Length: 539
Image (cartoon, rainbow, N blue to C red; front, side, top):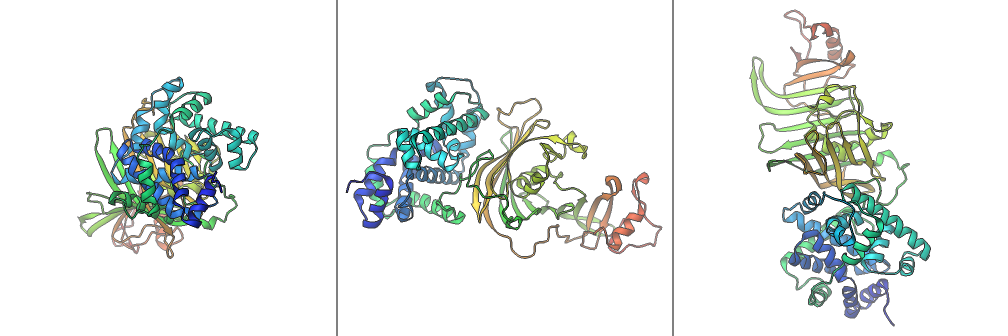
């Protein structure tokens, strides 16, 4: 039997343990895998190790992929995943550096445009829907004619041609947004001529030998790559065993469509990770975060490193926004005060924006954006900005959202404060498409976003799981807490010392007593004469 397509080779290898069939698969696809890896890491030795790891994974997963007619798409995604894992383990931010480096640009010829799109190409292709991605890979990475593309995708030659054109137009838009302006024809020519280069001559033979042995003879560094990639692939439970990058990348497209009629109760999960902060002077520091989400409710805990603050908690219980700060002992006449809190009639965080907003945008903001009409949003990017001091004022934002539950924003830009939020990667958890990497960037007034940001917050998801227990979507008051209450008529606020360890509901006796004492003209609460007492409250 003559082996002509990938699915036949996969069946032959998985059913008969045919080394010849696997070697044919390696020969057919090694240049693609090596080229994608090399673009991700920029180092030939590392690219060879990643290539080795990818084909070990293929050998392990061959039985599950035996009916796959577009193996190149699977290999493309696994290569990006493995390379991403490598880059992160090395503590590098290769993609962001490449993107920042590539932001200069005009319409150019194929030769001139390739160096500009090369660092962005694989991320752009990964952002496409699966069928579009397969079409681009088959047509330009593998050099197939339109008839072969159609046969592989189960479509006519005309339909394949239309799909390729649509996919090219999406790539053109992707590059244009990142400062690389060109035409689809030039982009197609550049990809066709440059996207795949020959792997080192001896690599195919060594890859085949080690992969057939399922990695038994592989080096420790390669086995680490394999282990890390397989762990992520299993964790996210993606149907095709392709996860990171399966959804939209900075766009509202990508990912497998799930009807928006899906029950809202599905949106319930816990997530944790870390935020890396950086400024234009090279300073960097890291905070941890943990977030709980249930429908429109959320609570975010942020733990700063090397800070006298123990932690921050910010939440929305469906009616009010709460901010809580656990601080060190600050003695006063009545004893130590170890916490401060704010409660306000609002539905977005507008306090500690740099700590809370990136995580809120990533995991807790979907319901808020559902409620927007047009692109007028309450100010949330930076509470210290002048715009945010006028809470009734709306800011115009450019928004793109994922097309899968929980429909989180993947791109938000506000020109007024020159701030931009982007999702770099999305991952599938139990039918939800949630960000696994995101960044909030800030530029000084008048500085174009094609320049490196003066300040950024980069978030990385490390764990996501089902929501456990009956989570209370208000911060827990553990100590005597100075509380600023902003729920009084007209948005008025008053400050008091809460010793009850409870946030006062507006139907509680304490709140009713406070309301009677509130006088906006007098600047807040007018306390009773000495000797009067409200349980759980001190001036």
